[in-house]
Length: 304
Image (cartoon, rainbow, N blue to C red; front, side, top):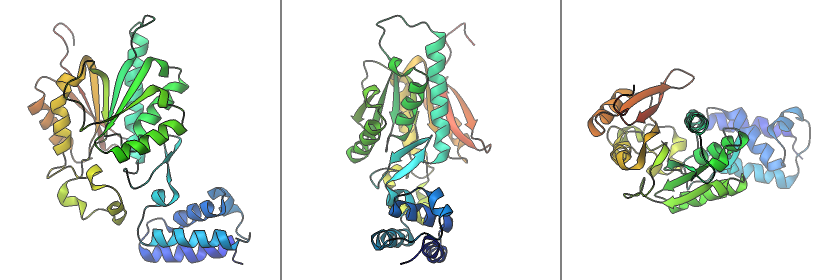
């Protein structure tokens, strides 16, 4: 019977040879799942024996990882904004850099709820998460608002063109107990006609250029290309959303769109062309790279 340490040593060597950029971490996470313990326990108990069933499960997971499949899909979960989210190949794996979008949306919502008095019986503030995928942004946002006891004043509409992706989002909303503050809508971006525009629109849409897709990390071939391909310059889908904002965003509302680090100038040009008079600010992530475009209608006359 092999020990934890023996299995890890062999796995790390195989994963390193296969091109994994984090062979030790991958092996520890996969072995922990197979044994039914956390990664910390795997690290701390190198001499513990591993039963044949768990060892076989680990080897099956290892084969998938050696073939290039992302660890998140193999495990069926990804940590995002402090939450463990279900993920599979129906939706893009949420990235740590997208957590900034959640933080910014939470701030926009909190500002509106605390600065403008809300009378009893007023309808909830409407928020859209466009191209929700796994529901990571929407679920994390409602969870954050719930911790601040603000979730009852908000409804988040999560849209996606993929019904399969919406199913993943529903699972995550239910498992984190926030489905009561969410609506799920199968739509290409946002419906053309809206009775009630949104106070906040957030979106992590495809922004990888078509020409760059083939050069990306091999793991990405397991993720849906629909969630990655942004066209020749990466902004095709974003431009289509920009064109919808005048009828989708309230006069005092805002749109927060994740963009590529090399796309601030293109984004500013697109906003100026499609939304003349609207304001666009490019916000950096913690590493100082361009990450989110904050887009808002022009201020009414007499206001800055």
